[in-house]
Length: 238
Length: 238
DNA sequence: GATCCTGAATGACCTAGGTAGCACAGGGCT
DNA sequence: AGCCCTGTGCTACCTAGGTCATTCAGGATC
Image (cartoon, rainbow over all chains, first blue to last red; front, side, top):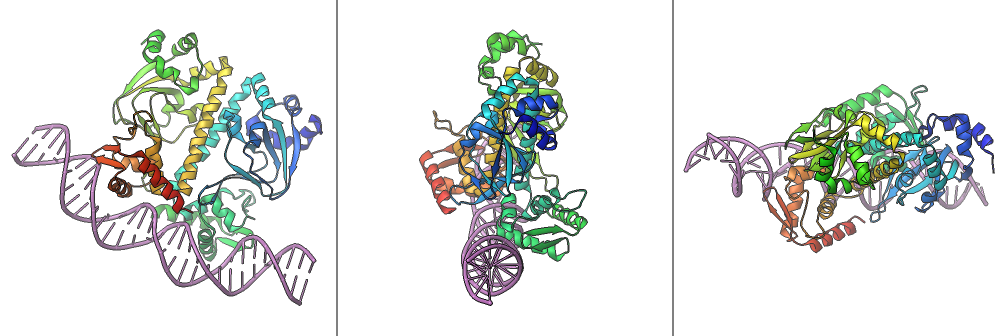
């Protein structure tokens, strides 16, 4: 068992970037971290037990986890969120304590900080001014879901793909992040399409010189070309 | 200005069915209702000012309001939620205080109870145990949005239409509610399609005897036929 | 009654995107 | 080296659903 002090010094920057617990001072963190322990999950491991998230709440400190849905009939997958360092889960369970029928898969070696759901709820009750951050975080997530719905209804695959790429460009380095090493299949799951179709569109982007493609490797060559393409799409849908 | 006492006696049953304020005793309601006033909005009136909802929070006591999105480019509409008696809005603004770019239109003569956002926030801070209900309500809304996303990705128009119908059947009376008097165009907006396509599918349901159609009037004739049709759709999507 | 206006019904057409199949390339393994 | 496995690239095909245009039907109003 690692002490709260050690957890804090190890993950200080991640914890402070964590919107859900915004504004906590060091001693407040230490108080809270007493209830946390660390877990390591290996790459490609899946969590299919929906119950699990009723009992613990997690903060990711390293690696990516996809949260996805599987259709009972077609067995197709759809990735709802790609969780990264500083993200938390499962917020659905925390909010209303009801089982959340959704799956998780680790895309990298994962480290998480875990706290028993009960302890977190107790802590919230003892520190009610923190509720505000939780509400506001929930608001952000609802907006994300809503904009997801709108995109699905209003825009075609090309547009969704372009937006996905643009949202994951690091502004400083101009490089593609988070999704750059995913196979076409996973890209497809993120925008609600299929491998073949995504590949078809990626080929087009490659041909006009806006991206480079290699095995499990996407690279942005020219952002302005991508933006131009997006404009063109918007125009088409009039 | 109507007194809190009067508001309470007029709308007691609506207020008590309001999940967001679950468990409030009469005197607690009276305390809160002091900050409320009543408004009447006329049928077909629209609210397109996104700012408005930063300053007041509303509870519907009568009539239906649709909350919808419009695509900037195609000008298509999509109805996110059909709000009814006992529903509240805008939760997005309440949660994080950020402008919510969404439109509202009254489908009937509307009565709402309105409270200044600030007053509601103050009241929450004074009664922090109420936060739990707000969190849990937000959770429910997130689940609704998530299942909306899944439906859009996994299922075809027929399935979405069938589910919409089945979700709006009153279990006791076996009659269609809430959406029974909407024109095809509005039905289409609810499931993310177009009038012509929805009509095409409705005709089929009419032909196999599961529904009746008249001008601005949908009627369920045989629920079991609808359920059967749904099964068939699920099977097809294997 | 005559005149509008909105919405329903229908048919013809078009296309984005899903599907299936196969050849091939790279990278890791024994 | 030879093998296997996972992804990619590309073809040819199919169809659900979007689009457009026109006719028809029911209420409401004058």
